[in-house]
Image 1 (cartoon, rainbow, N blue to C red):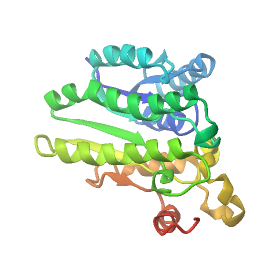
Image 2: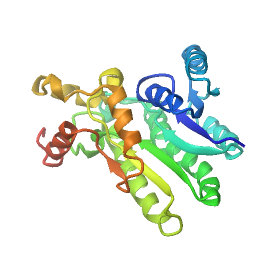
Image 3: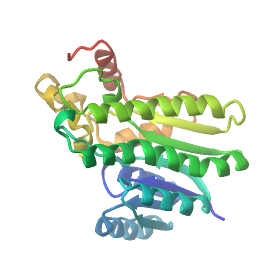
Amino acid sequence: MKRKILITGGSSGIGKEYAYQFAKLKKDLILVARNEIELKKIKKDLENKYKIKCEYLIFDLSKLDKINQLCKIIEKENIEILINNAGFGNRIPFSKTNYSITQNMINVHITATTLLTRAVLDQMIKRNSGKIINVASLAGYLFTSKSNIIYNSTKRYIIHFSKNLQDEIKKQNKNIKIQALCPGFTKTNFDKHAIFKTMLPRLPSFMYMEAKDVVLKSIKTLENRRVVYIPSFKNKILYFLLRLNFYR
């Protein structure tokens, strides 16, 4: 069975860019998202341009039953790389956020990332190879915020989950690589980083990155043994400012 790359949130932003960059490398793809119209367009474009096979699956990963269904599907696939990219933001204060939005964010960011990772892990261990990219955010290092408490916290979980999983896996298999990608301001995917909007007046335009640049840097560093990857020097500066609670 030919190996494939599975990308959640594959219909837009960083997920879509991963699809195009891996298609250029002649990798077959499985894209997961809710937007079937966009997925059809991407599938047609990638298959015509790069002569690869691009499948797509329509799943709402905010629903636990859909996550479990997807897990059963991918257990039967041969996944070379899993990219947990699906996510969304919310700027409503936690005390005013309804239960469904909170639960949906936890399901998308935490439950889906965790269970999909578990679903591919056995085959990667058996095969003695594999890569998992968990798209987190610099928001995971933002300790104080007037809103976005759940967003911050779930992204922080992704970072710690990735680090702890790599530590566990490397003891039995050094050929499986886990990456926690922590982008900052990303032009074509800015809605996912709405958490930073209150900082916009203080941030110069050069701090922004294109989704393509974020993805290319992520792919380039996949062989690096460092788990947490912050793309570009400017985002590393932002990381240190966040660690110092500069925006408190």
